[in-house]
Image 1 (tube, protein in one colour):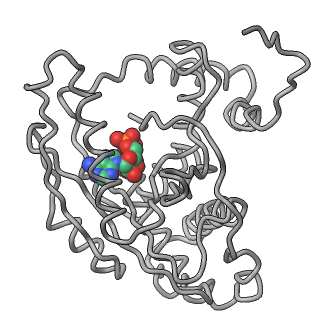
Image 2 (cartoon, rainbow, N blue to C red; image 1 turned 90 degrees about the vertical axis):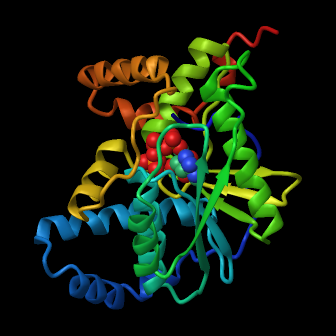
Length: 283
Ligand SMILES: Nc1ncnc2c1ncn2[C@@H]1O[C@H](COP(=O)(O)OP(=O)(O)OP(=O)(O)O)[C@@H](O)[C@H]1O
């Protein structure tokens, strides 16, 4: 389930890592070749492609700058594990330094837990400081609300509180392109509203910036990335989670793709190509 953040203002201008990396490509490529000597050439090319796709999102939207302290929100699913991996991988070849922390929020009234030992080792290997935070969402107490809503609302509150209390100005989320276009379709159909999850979003009067470095990568690409890197997905199906409308949106998109193989990327690009004149504009 994608977090239902509303669309809004984009991040303000930063001194990003744009441009630095191009001149230094020989070093990262050699480095990647060394650490990935058990992976086939085509898979290595694929991993590099995904790192570049993330780099494009990071640079285009000025997500990362020197001396940043970034908090990566980790569910334990393939996307947030890949997000840790990609941000740590890029840090090895960029001439700027940034601190990486990961946070996993455990909700004690939801009946599942991830493998903490795996996540701890995963973060340690990548020089990422892990914070495990336990919270109580109050699902039973707030029985008039849907459990999924209560849980994700509480998780977001914990996430933002932790970031603000501990001096983080940026939170990285593992949403990808499919999350964005599914959210677009769901918001249109369910809420009569054209909005989605933007690459960056300022919150609390600019005190926090949400960043989504995987926003240009598809779900299929992230699945392949996690498979090649042999990540163990720690995320189990939550008994409260209702995927009905998201699954329906996903099925439509699959159908659209049969009509036009570019459907996925066209839906994403359409959000930046709005013809106001050809819209009703009725209030
Ligand atoms: N328990 C959690 N603790 C911290 N961050 C979380 C948690 N659950 C979700 N997130 C953040 O919210 C994003 C979207 O959540 P969602 O549940 O849709 O993820 P997912 O697609 O199922 O799993 P993942 O994105 O990790 O593969 C995640 O990518 C992660 O950044």
